[in-house]
Amino acid sequence: MLLPYYEVREGKGPYVLMVHGFLSSRAQWLPNLDALSTVCRPVIVELFGHGRSPAPKDPADYAPERYVMAFEHIRRKLGVDRWFVIGQSLGAGLTLRYVLAHPSRVLAHLLTNSSTAFSNKNWVQEVRPGTEKLIAVVKRDGAAALERVAVHPKKARRLAPQFKDVLCTDAKLHDPLGAAYTARYTSLADPIEAALMETNQVPTLLVCGTQEERFKPLRRVAEQILPNLEVIEAEAGHAVNLEAPDAFNRAAVIFFRRHGQILDMG
Image (tube, rainbow, N blue to C red; front, top):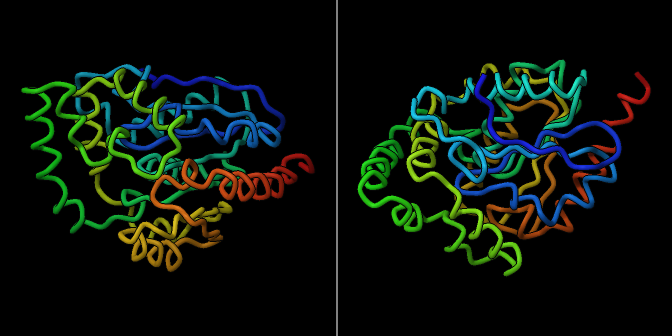
């Protein structure tokens, strides 16, 4: 089975699967690893076509279902029964799908602002033409086309320079067509059905960047349909774990420490 690149870091407690968003990399988690390692062992995945991961030629390999299978394969390779899960942006859409497919394998789920996690069919139809255009432009212009995308790290305005620099360096590793396929075939898969989300019994924490205006209606959707959802606000935009790392780390450590006790007792 084709797996995305992943690496396991030192830490204490259960493993935690960590999945970043579009045009990011393992560097997404730089200001969080020290804090997280006090309560869990990070397993950092890079999306296909991103960073050090392979870039499959078949668009079908970018489907969210393939990621769900890959995450479960990684869990089995690690030899653990249950773990924590963190998803950021597009990564949250993937981790939510994994949680809903394998709830018995997840101790707790932390996610950040994510359009793909809580999108509807209208949003998918609205955004799809732009992603199809991106594929065509990438085939013509290569990496230069990715640098013009609004969420490319070089365009980030809220990030500390040391984090932005590493993200920009890693962005040079992205496979242009693989990243474009991610935008089209991973981000814009059929939305997760609300009825399925309503069945969620896994403890879930949304660390919400309150300065991202476009996420506010989606936050309300999450609060309405996700049982067992806690929300903690942080003064940040979309990349809350990078923009407000202290608030994110504090929330994550408290949340995982609480739910890691279930494993200790079991």
